Amino acid sequence: MDLLLLEKTLLALFIAATIAITISKLRGKRFKLPPGPIPVPIFGNWLQVGDDLNHRNLTDYAKRFGEMFLLRMGQRNLVVVSSPELAKEVLHTQGVEFGSRTRNVVFDIFTGKGQDMVFTVYGEHWRKMRRIMTVPFFYKQGCSTVSLRVGV
Image (tube, rainbow, N blue to C red; front, side):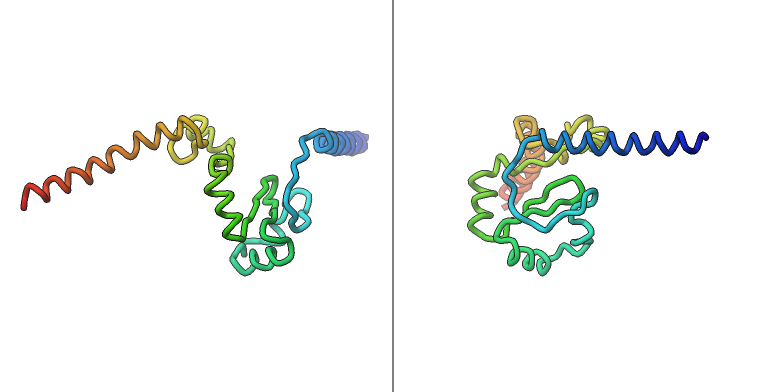
């Protein structure tokens, strides 16, 4: 009897989770994303790409889907740009929008919510940290050039 109750409970939880995910996807924002290979529900395109994400694979995908395509790596979206013109547009013209890292719960735990230099999101805090970190490097370089000039 307990086994039957457990089965019914697990089935009800599975159905409730499926309905909740479906409703959240239908209500969520619809972004116009570039084309790409069809992802597997939980893994995305990991099974198709595997650990072989080299230039030959990416070139084949670019031939099939165009200069810009989407790979889903688990629950994350990875947009791949393969033309120099689009790369310039993404990196130079719209660099602020695309230049930041995504937030990760694990990194937030270990770094104090991204307050370090490596995992912080691009913004005012990142610029302040960059200014603080570059001073010692330029100071040492300046000191070494001054000592060379004095020695001459």
